[in-house]
Image 1: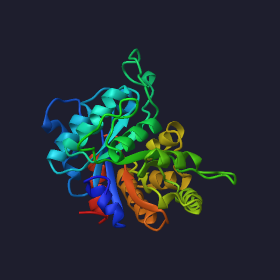
Image 2: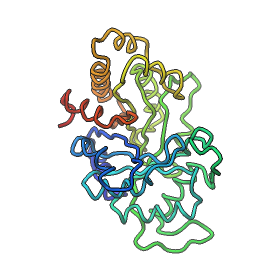
Image 3: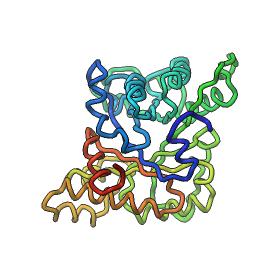
Image 4: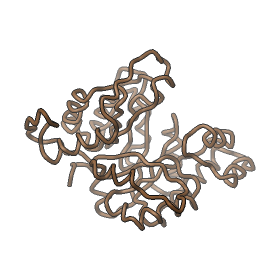
Amino acid sequence: MKSNGTLEKKLAAGEFVITAETTPPDGADEASVMAKVECLKGLVDAVNVTDGAGARAHMSAMACSAVMAKNGIEPVLQFTVRDRNRLAIQGEFIGGPALGIPNILCLHGDSITNGDQPDAKPVEDVDSRGLMSMARQMRDEGTFPSPSDRAIDPAPKLFIGAADNPRDPDPDFKPGGLEAKIAAGADFFQTQFAYDIEVLKRYMAVLNDHGIPEKAYFIVGVGPLASAKSARWMTENLFGVHVPDAIIARLEGAEDQRAEGRKICAELIEQFREVKGVAGAHLMAPRGEKAIAETLTEYGIRG
C-alpha cells in the first residue's frame, strides 16, 4: 500500500468506489466545514477538497481536509500549482499525511483571471506532472527533490491522483498524456463529467487496448443535474463536457427536474459499473453535497 487510506484499499480489493467533492467554506471554524460535508459521511469512500476552485479564496484545502479527517471523512486533497512554489508544496506533501490525509489530486488550477481577484500573481513553479513527480519521489525514495536530496523520515505515504477528460477517441488516438502522468507518479485518475455513456465506453475501450487501467485506477465523473438549463450551460461552458440531447429532453419533460437529474445520475453510476476499466464514480455538484447524498441514498447506491 502506498498510503494508509481506505480509498486505495478498496480500489486494490476491486471494489467499485464512490467519491464526492466539496468546496471549502468561507468560514473560519470546524462547524463551517461539517455543515457542508456531514451529509456525505458513511456514504462515500472519500471526498475531494477543491483548492481555490474558480481562482477564488476559501478556507485552505489543507485545513478543510484536516477537519474532515478528524471527523471520520477521508479526504482527497487537491493541489494546484497556481498558488504555491515547490517549497510550499513539498512542505504540504509531508504535512498532509501527518494530519490524516492519505490522498492527493495534482492539478494546474483555474486561471487567476477567472477569479474575483484577477490582479493576484500566479506562481506555477512546476506543472501538474512535476507535482506528481515530486510527490512520488518524496514517497518512494524518502528524499526531497534534487539538488537537495535531504532525507525524509518517515516518508509521506501518499496515494497520488491526476485528472482526465473522457472523450470520443479518433482513429489515431494514443493515450500518451495518460502514460506520461502514470510515469510521473499517478496511481489513480478522477475524470471530468461523463454523461455520454457511449462515448465513455469507446474511450475506455481504447484505454483498455493500451493497458492503461491496469496501471492506474479510473474514477469517472458524474453528478446530479439540477435542470435542463444547467445541463445546457455545462455543455456550452465546461471544457470536454457534453450532456446528450436525450438527457436534456428527459429533464425538460420531467415534472421535477432536480429529481430527474438525481435519477439520471444514479442510472449512469450503475452503467459505469459495467464498463471495463472503470473503478468507481466521482460525484460533483457545485454547492450540491446534499444532492449527492440524496442521489446515493434515494436509489440505494449507498446508505
